[in-house]
Amino acid sequence: MIFGSFFRAIGLYGTHRVARIALDIDSTLHHYWDLLDSIARRRFGVELPYHEQRDWGITKLERADLVAAIEETHSEENILRAEPYPGAVDVVARWHEEGHWIHVTSHRAVATREATERWLERIGMPYDDLHCSYDKVPRCVELGIDVLVDDSPVNLAAASDAGIVAATILHPWNERLVEEGAAIGGRDWPELAGRLEPLLLR
Ligand SMILES: [Mg+2]
Image (cartoon, rainbow, N blue to C red):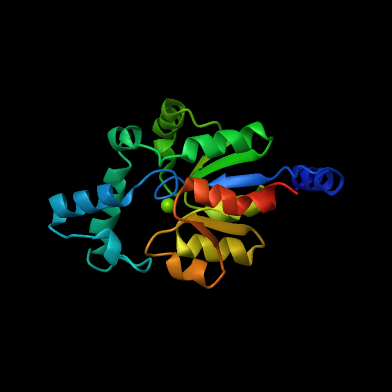
């Protein structure tokens, strides 16, 4: 990408490297799992305890029921109600102020875009670009993204394979990937920001 190369070229001569950063929303910018668990319990009588979710597959629910539960997590009301993780908005605002390019990307229907925009405005999250669709990592590659912050082990592995730095808030389902060194992890946003700092400022 022209702009990606341009930013990287600046990095060679300056001390401040401008990066293109992609940010997932669910389980990255806010605690999503408990909402999914509560919907699964109410609609299908199935519990999805956070601490027992140690890999990416959800087998306790039929596929169609899982899709329906996830869809409900992305109702306008639920999108707007989400509260960001402590420090998330501050860290992203600082990155944005430092000149990093912020691409918010969520695996959710295109139709949720307007509610997602309103949510980002409500929480005061600065960003340059928003993508609500199901082609996250290919889109990151097209955009020349340097760092993807995402909790999904599938996305983290795909990003890493594509030469993108993979980073995540630690969850039971991605701890192993972080332990193996395939992704940079932090227990919370301030810790994750500290771990990414050497990559963003050099
Ligand atoms: Mg997520």
